[in-house]
Length: 266
Image (cartoon, rainbow, N blue to C red; front, side, top):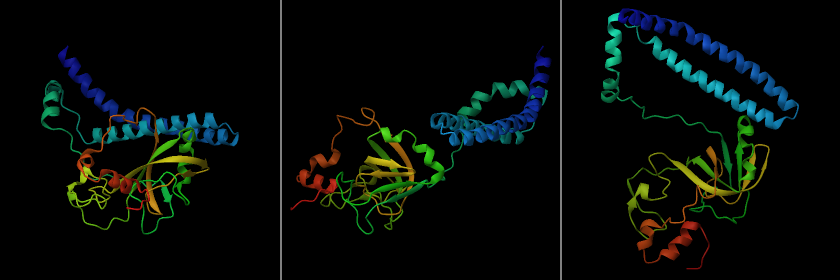
C-alpha cells in the first residue's frame, strides 16, 4: 500500500507539470472571449452588465497569474524519488517554521493618474474644505470604469506620491507649525518619510468621464496619483481619536489653525 502511494505521488507531480500550462491556456481562451463580449455590452449601453463582466475577467487574470507562479515554482524542483515522499511530508511543518518566505524590500507602484491643483510652490498642510481654485483628480483612461459608483460617496481617500520632496530623511522631525517641537517622523505628518506617500481626505463635487472634481487638496499641481478609496461613515470615523502630543502644547488651538490651513490674524 505504501509503495503504491509513493508511486502515485510522483506520478501526480508529473501530471501537474503537464496540466498547469493547459489550465493557463484554457483560462486565456475564456478571457479573450469575455473581453470580446465586454466590448459588445459596452456598445449596447449595458453598463451594469459590463461592470460585472469586467470583474469576472480580472478574477480570471488573477487566477492565471497565481497558476503561472505556481508552475514556475514547480519547474524549479525535481520530482522527488519514491523513497523521499514520506520524508518530504514529514518535514513540511519544520521547514515552514525554520525558513519563512523571504520578502523583497522593493515594491513597484504604478501611477494611475495625476492630481491638478492651483498650488505650484506652496500648499496648505491639510486640505481646506472651502479652498478656492481648480481641484481635480484626472484618472488614466484605462481606469475610467474603476470609478463606477464612486460618485455615491461623499468623501474619498486620495493616495499619492509626494514627488517634490528634496529634503533628506530624518527619523526626528520638527513640523513647521509645531513651534519647535521634535517628534519621530511616524508621529508626524511630515512629507519627508522613508516612503514619500501622502494621503488626503477630500469631498467629491462631481465626476465626469475620468475626472473627479473635489474640494481643496493639500498637494502640488501635477502630483502622481497612486490610489483612491471611499471614505465610509463609521468605518473611517473614530469618535475617541485624540490630538496625541499636540494635546500637551500650550498654544494648541493656534497650532490647529496652522495644521488645518485656516487663515488667521495671530
